[in-house]
Length: 332
Ligand code: GZL
Image: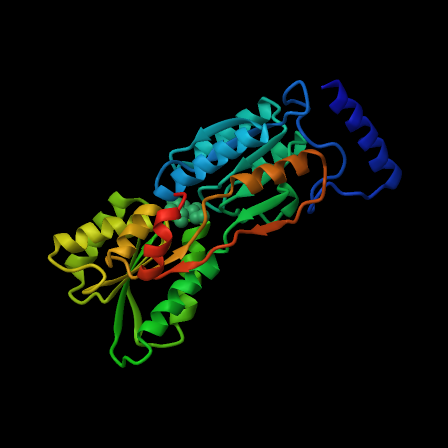
């Protein structure tokens, strides 16, 4: 701890000497960190996770916990059961504990400015991971590490447009959205809608939240099937809702992947298996493996080093054939 204190003193002096040196994208310059953390160079991270709603979330949590161990980061972890008030409570508790850095995946985009201001006043840097917030004040966090959800929605739309390029008939689409107000739900819907708007034959005849869960996906798909005699395509914002919908489609005596084409996003194991089995037709990947990059970014911001304000994760797409090839080696 003494070593860190001395380093901070020197760094602090340097910052004053060379004035204007900033600690990162838009962040407040000078010493960062709540002054807490372990007795040596080990940093302490407070992490607030959305919940355990999907296969993606489980894989993401595993990646964060394993990466913290590998990086020698002391991790304080909380699961918010998809409730924003639980995340805000967790962030406040990390501020009181004077952790060195806070990271979280905001369950929804709005309502974070007050607690993020409290973290900033406490000089604890914040990293957004997986999902974004709509705060106008970009100095409330150091960086946002995660996918481009608009791009993911566009990829889903582009596959559909290609599949039906020679058809003149109306294409009736139903959409299972993620939880209301979540960045991936807002942006995947936006990207998909922008692409299919190019051709009026594509019609979204029903669109409801399935909260990224299998159970809700099945429930909403059952309702779609009851009230819409002709459904050609399902666009589900994640694999888990698609898997729940498959149960509903089979329960209605129809064949998923044939009677109703299915496009999902994530590419977790069970989704990829359904793709390989022909029950899903196309999956856009959204990588949950953010842990290593998160720990690297955390160490940098605690040291007051510059970090990019946006780190976009690499991801691809899968057809059934590609899923068969990829499944044996997939980590999740
Ligand atoms: C995307 C992530 C989404 C996944 C869902 O980065 O926030 O939340 O697509 C998960 O499976 O529930």
